[in-house]
Length: 373
Figure 1: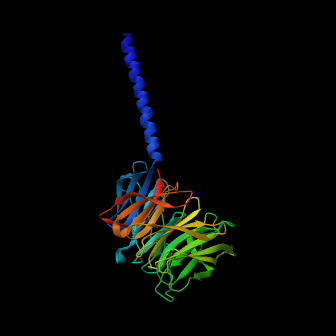
Figure 2: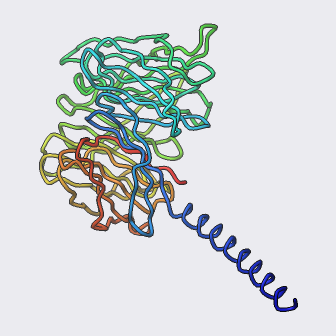
Figure 3: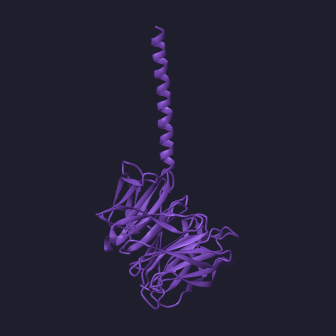
């Protein structure tokens, strides 16, 4: 009888130890994992789980859409929204981020061919590349996409209007919200006040209306410093980064250029994406077509940039994402149909190639989001 109780107690102890082991391992794995959302040119965007220790990944979900070239996640539970660059069939779509793939609807944009979208105050705002327009799409309480509540069209002045990015800036002094818009075709940056009316969110163009960049520069993507005092503008066709001080006066955003830095020394005319490290100490920009790779800059206290390195990548690096902890960079190499994985040295800002990549034979990746599990 005594031996039987000893066996039972040993079994119970082993069971408890096993539970503790698996719970601790699950927690450890959760800390070591990132959720990646990858969009591009193909028939579906994908959700992946990447393990930073094993350097392995699994595709956990597909989001069916035509050419889902740009994505975002919003709200809780997470929702996934994206644009479809598909000519006359282009539009905005959404899914609940679950294994059920519950659709949040799709709204056509009349051939605007939106290439970028952002989320603000339960609205989606899109940059129309094909027709030079901003679309404002409200969401209902369940996150479903409603028809556009406002469309802002832009004139073709000195070129064909090609909007490439819409980005919200909250002014640090007043808390006022503004939308800045890059027009690659007309070499302009537009600015709007974001206002609340009885009919919901509305965009009102600032008195300053727009800022011009040098002709032929092709402003594409922008990034704001963590304190909101500086803006970094990557110009696609010139391969330059324009650095601006950002101030606010009488309901207007004022941009004053303080530096011009070289992103693409080859001047291949296809610079693509720009991001700050999570701590704001380093700035990265991608360049295609020439010496494909990532330019690396150190940010100085006065907002200016010092170029410190260049990391070669696979073919056609377009969008890239930095993990929230700043440990990894995931680079969409569009023409190679792969996402290349780099480790980031957070003290120097340099990148090192892990030799690992994620392959997508049916998708040319053009957008990636990286989220900690």
